[in-house]
Length: 118
Image (cartoon, rainbow, N blue to C red; front, side, top):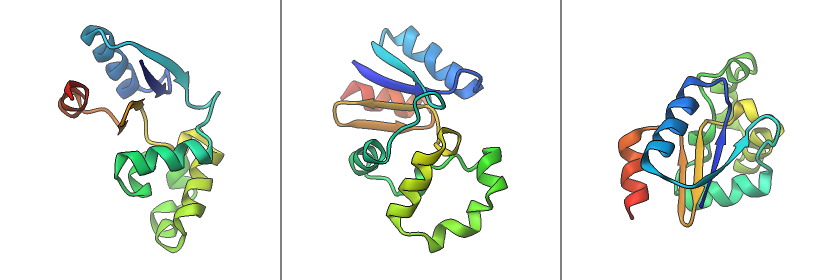
């Protein structure tokens, strides 16, 4: 069973959900704004993913642009970045798919397919 973290109005999240349903993947859905990922969850997921914290930011989001994070992130420590992500679900790249040893941020069908075949 996977944890699928999404924003229902997001078209990419809708595509990912449809894809999961078509593949018969069992998951528990969680609304990213109503239940924002905690700093502890993000720490674990980022570590498991092997990706830098930056990959977990929704760089195309309005909030990211409003806060001018493109220029500010470099000066922030990893802990500060994680705390910022935990402060607002709209800053987090979505959808997220989390399972046993699997953490995927953003939806690319081929990558998700490869990861779920393992």
